[in-house]
Length: 452
Image (tube, rainbow, N blue to C red):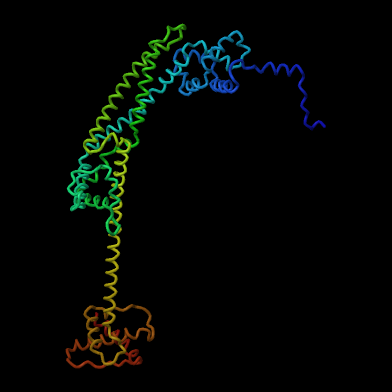
């Protein structure tokens, strides 16, 4: 009975009334906006007065980019904020979100302040997003214009193209569209094993090896092809507008009513710095566009029709294709060399096999009839080379190597004849196994004596 779960005691009437008093009704804001604003304020856990002072002082140590963005997004509309400000006498009876509205409503030009502060916090990031793109395109234009190796490669392409088009209407061209370089892989040899780009790369390797270094001279092309000139121009125009709007707000901002209000002071110095940064970016951008136009005149393409992104994307693709083609040529040559060596090894092995077969055919079968001359010639050759005196040492085995015994016997006979100087006709050899076994030991002893 004591171990059982205790039943929940019903709430008394007084407790219900106290719970109802704790829930404060919203007077101006709707429940969704009020809840979002309350969650946001609870995440920072800062007193409302401290948030207000941070806005007045433009305190970047407190006001982060994320915080200001949420304030702009969740801040009640000006008319509702004005209505909340009228409930100042009922502050304690209001919900937290509306209490915050009463505190923050005392800041004049609140939305303009927040937008200006956000622009100040994001300005350096905007500069860092714009400046590298301008630098990349500018550097890519200069690298391409000054690359002698790339220019030499284009000359070779033009020469090969005129040779291939000789006799046609396209022969004798003075130039070609730069986008054509990406189509060099579409022209293939009759056996479909090599493209025109493979041929050009191999020609450069054999005759103009310096041209192979042109990809290393175009290091900014990869970055330049990712730059959108349209987006770059829009970002600069947006920056110019924001600076102009901020300058207008600062010039027309009312005199401060609170000692902590440092908005005009800090924004005046910021506007001056921002304007200087923008002027530098604008000059860099103008120089970039001028270099691109000059590039269009040099390579004969319309810069109004071909964007920076498209042009450098084609160039990047060609550069990567050329590098890959050089690797494929080297791989093909390695494979051909491997096949050539395999063929030579095969031919050598076949030649050795044929030589061995020829030697085997020259050996006379011991059991053939009436062909003693061939036997004697072979034995003389074996005597001269010393092969007749080489034999493996080991236990004597019956009639296992009869052929070796016969050879040793004949060699012994020849040696004896040579020592006596006799010019007698050579005696015939008996080939029965019994006589061979009887003379085997004597022949071996005679051979050893001769060698000694």
